[in-house]
Length: 152
Image (cartoon, rainbow, N blue to C red):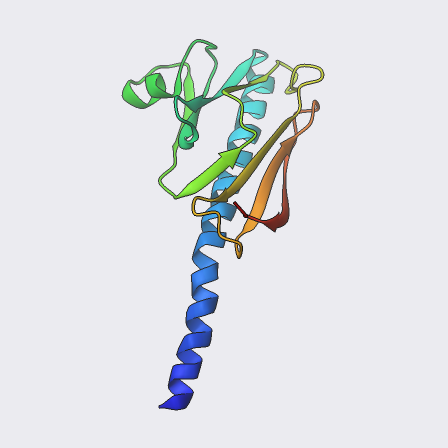
């Protein structure tokens, strides 16, 4: 009985850390994928493409559109031909460093001097969850850096 309780305690602590870390990792990957999709669409169509956060920021999700005026909410509520993709987030995640709209030009680059760093953390800001930062430089290519803990 004592051995079982020790094994259960060890397994529980490992599982308790696993789920929030996976949520953060998955949302960071979704944001990176969205940025790559927007970049690809810009090059494919030779037009500007916009990744736009919801009115509440990335916490609710984002939309990719070829229309600068199109909002996340527009893309969610109606079938607009200029909405390329919509991601709706349902995980308890927090973001910092976000911008309302990311613009990719027809060459798949961000406007000169515009870099993007978005930190993705557990919504509870737990110290055992690894922070992921989605970084995009002016070349337009996004990458994920896993660094530090999500501390309040």
